[in-house]
Each structure stands twice: as C-alpha cells, then as structure tokens.
Image (cartoon, rainbow, N blue to C red):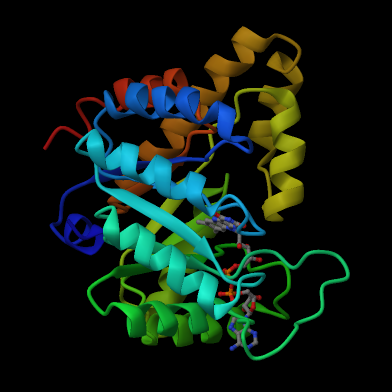
Length: 289
Ligand code: FAD
C-alpha cells in the first residue's frame, strides 16, 4: 500500500523509524527489533539508508522484514554519493521485494566532497525525478526542516526549494526532529501559504538519555526549549528517570500537536521497542479511531 493512501484517509497516523545495522552479522538482531516494534502496530515503518550507500542491501533486508510483519515499509534512499546505475539497482531490488514507498534524500555532504560528474545527483529533487522515471508507481516522500536546513540561506529559499521538490512528485514530507511545537506549526503554515499541500509528517525524537540530546542538536540544528533543559538538569544523571521523562515529553509533544490539528506523527525510535511501545500506550485512547 502507498504511504500517501495511509496519510490521506483523514485518520491519525503514528509511524516509526528504524535504522539497519552497520555490520551484516547484526542483521538478525535488528530484524528481531523490527518484529518487536511491529507489535505496537505503527501505521507504517521507515528504514534509514547508510550515507555512502555501501549498506543498501541492509536497508532492503530490513524493509522486507517490515513487509513480512504486515506493516508497510518506507525505504530511505540517498543519492549524493551514488551513481545513477546504483540508484537504478537499489530501486529495482526494493520493487522486487514489494517495497512501494521511498523517502528520496540527498544525504549529507561528506567533508572535502567534490561532485564527480553528471552520473551523480546534487539535490534530492533530481532523485525524485529519477525514481519516478524508473517506476512512476512508487510513492515518493521527501525530507523537510521546520527550523531550516543547515545549508540554507533563509527560510524563504528553503521553502522555495522544498516546493520544487514537491512539484517533482513528492507525495508527502517527513520533518526533521524538533522539540518546540510552535516551530513546526509555523513551518506548516508557511508551506501551505507557499502552495505545498502534501501531508507533512511531524518527526518526534524521544530523548531518553542525556548524551542523546547533544548529538541530536548537532545533527539537526534544532532548538531546545528551556523546559527540556530543566528536565535534563533534574533527571539527566539517572538513566531510568531520564528515560521516563523523555517518553513523557515526547508523548506530551504529540498530544499537543494533535490538539493543534496535526494528524501524522513519525517517531524516531532509535531502535528501542520499549520506548516506542511506551509512547503508543500513552496515546492508546487518543489514536484509537
Ligand atoms: P535537499 O532536498 O536536496 O536539500 C538540501 C539543501 O539543498 C537544502 O538546503 C535545500 O534548501 C537546498 N536545495 C534543494 N534544492 C536545491 C536546488 N535546486 N538548488 C540549490 N539548493 C537546493 N540521511 C542519510 O544519509 N540517510 C537517511 O536515511 C536519512 N534519512 C533522513 C530522514 C529525514 C526525515 C530527514 C529530515 C533527514 C534524513 N537524512 C538522512 C539526512 C539528509 O540526508 C540530510 O539532511 C541532507 O543534508 C539533506 O537531504 P535532503 O533530501 O533534505 O536534501
């Protein structure tokens, strides 16, 4: 089933992200993680793609496992360091394994990277065009940034490029993580004003240990409200307390988004089934439609 159909049925959706292992010998244990997570019945599940594309087979393997659990998989695919041939190969493998949905991404620019030649892609919109040219039936999503992509000059430029990407055939957007709901709600409003009308899924990262927040801010460039720092100050040194506080913060964030009319939530689970399950339990009546 296409993710666009799941998102466009006017119901609340809560989906999960998982990442594949870095080494093949860990693939079975990641599959077990997926099986465990599927018990929480997410609306769909996405699986990330290693930046250099060298572990693309791992992504396909995990996406296939998700499909075997009767949950719709969304496979990520990055293009910056992949040739056109490699993109064709990965899209074919995904299609052969029944994966109908791809999140088309550029990937981060490695330090000292130089764009080699026309066999390569420079931005995600080109990957969207390529996937659609290989198989127009694949449902393609894209990434968006409520607090602006770190390379963008300003919000206006960022949203103009986002519109270009959507106009190439992106059917939904998944947002970068954020901890301040007002930033996301303002961003959605700006997108609508600029004519971006596809579903925009709110990306929520439950912070369940103190080290995670530093890394998350570095990666995403997102702002963190004072309330969150106070939680860290009080509970950051106690893993159990911090985990519980992080789960509750993420759950409250989701409830507030829903109260503001947002129906589509994506949880960056960090491959932690217990965390994903605890959030789903905290929302059990709210998402029961
Ligand atoms: P683009 O849409 O190409 O945007 C990148 C930058 O280029 C932006 O500043 C944009 O404004 C600008 N831009 C866009 N079009 C143009 C144009 N025509 N001309 C000039 N500038 C332009 N990374 C991974 O390696 N693997 C993953 O699995 C992965 N999953 C992700 C999932 C989500 C939901 C998100 C938000 C990010 C993910 N990333 C992943 C990280 C992502 O690859 C990086 O954030 C990357 O820097 C940008 O990717 P993009 O697809 O948004 O790129």
